[in-house]
Image 1 (cartoon, helix red, strand yellow):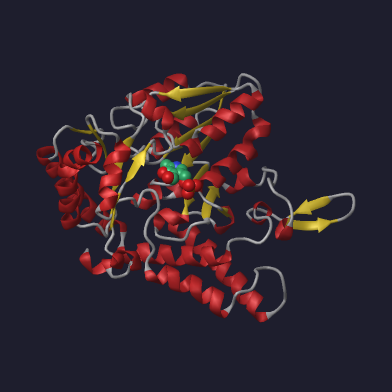
Image 2 (tube, protein in one colour; image 1 turned 60 degrees about the vertical axis):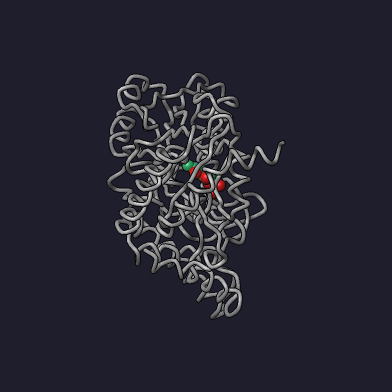
Length: 400
Ligand SMILES: Cc1ncc(COP(=O)(O)O)c(C=O)c1O
């Protein structure tokens, strides 16, 4: 996969980038498309009758269609948002009116805060109950437990497609079969999922699926909320203004149909165009090729870490399809490890990974996470392992 490295300008700066689960690097084609928008046709969408405005609106809507095709959904089911967090908060606002006192919302301990706090806060506001479904050793949902704790009181089940700490893949289709035996909505946080595998909304049968552009090699500041159209039709807008309206009089306002009624104000136009290019880029490389390479590099890395780095504890070693390696080194704080790696221009993530309830359940305050993408190489892993082998000595010198 070395041939693709030239597509990523950031890699020319000699960083070793192992933090793609936080935000992926952007290929030149994404950057160029956004620059082209600003340089050649930097006008607003839906705002005028001029030919540039028409062209930009068409480009923006074409991206919506491309995303729909990418996810096997309909274009009118694709809402542009600021990212996964904003998509999930939007769903929480959509569903708030349907929650009564003592209703139940189910999440797992492996959720990112973006798919935990909105539900916790909704429960606080409505005096509803937040339930935690059991998870297996790989962090995926225990389907028997889900079946056991579901009831007529369950109104929402909100789960990750792939966790950002362990990388286990939840069987969404199976989960949907259980959830849809009850009058409950299934909300999927796909921030890590869509990076890793082709998603198919018809097959998965989730009611909502959220993801961020910047994790799939696209720009920051844009994401997507997919929602089944018959559900979206019943939802109230969460923001007002701009082109989401149909007719406004002094006394009342009517709104456009979904998804437009959920896109208030000037939208992220350059970012949408960049996201469209990112999707083209993924399609041109292909998930299978990316994943085969990542798997090979990860197996290589895990073998080296376990045989060469003293006192390492890897939390997700046996999850074969994960692109993540999450670990601690006994007696050394994760932040110190990351600072040492940073001094060698090796970028990893250290901290709670926005998954504090999970960290608490693991009995740690932080871990180090190496997240691999298809542009990472075995040579980079060698450098990482060498740097980790020195980390104890580095700290001894520093604090002597
Ligand atoms: C599983 C998961 N959910 C949600 C998010 C939040 O994404 P964003 O910050 O792009 O809204 C992340 C980001 O790390 C994530 O990994």
